Length: 371
Image 1 (cartoon, rainbow, N blue to C red):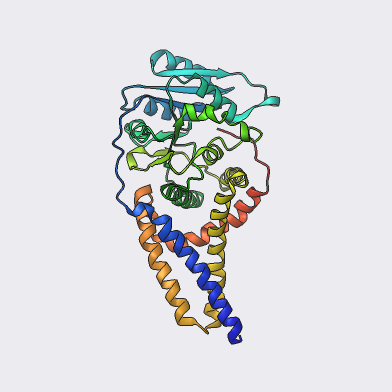
Image 2: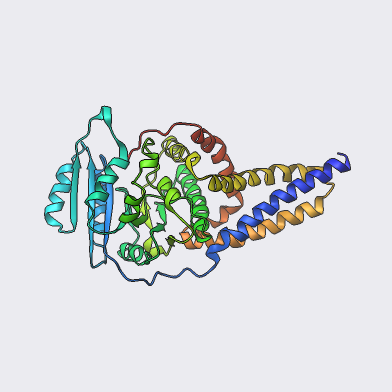
């Protein structure tokens, strides 16, 4: 190759690498600071769970929610037209548990209104201002979960983002789920710590009832079946009203999809809401994704060209060391340290997910929400 082309190729590669390093040192390094448990006051809270044909999960996980070490809380379960015996189970449990409040919704399959309607009903029924959300297939990592989430809500805070992990199983699908979930946490938790909050996950999320009604609930995206968590947070989060609760005792653990096709459908639905994010967030996430693509694509070409081989390998080495340091800390904080040995392959895996799932999801219509 001629010198001019080789030089341009090297500069383009170096630029992509610099952008990547800016994300690592400027954003993803936020968890390098020592993670401390929240020390605020324990405040009354209402836990809201929406369920549809999830009796098995409710039987397994609801007792752990009801037995939280918290002095003043209620648990509201909104049964959205279940036909699997959920009604009998919840009604029997409600008679035994003073903290439990059950709401049954009758639905017509032709006019199913989705999770947002069920969640709105639960919010209206809540008696406390602090709302904490999780799903029927989620179990708190400890009996301190609710206390820690409520302690993270200060007088200036309206939103608390939590960590929602998945159970570990021995399968290829589970490995993919674990690494993609870690990468999602790497982004949205660290972005929030950098005062650039763009989403949260409904498996472990808290916000004030007052905030919900101040923006008329899900009105701005009511036409979409998904987005009750990420789009709501994207709309309402500011630099000063959001905090994170990432100590291990405050995590939740969910049962993952067992089949790759099921997981891909789920991720496709999640990606479909990304086009609704604020432009600044779409730009930041897009810049990260494209710089990652160009870093690897141009890096391979620059190595094959060999005109600037030593500088190229030096940049690759520096980024590798940076990634090793920062991902180690993030994996430790989020509970993924056992996967640390695969971090060199994380980028390639995420690129493939973006290409085969994310792009399709971005240009597709949201599908029916199952919960």
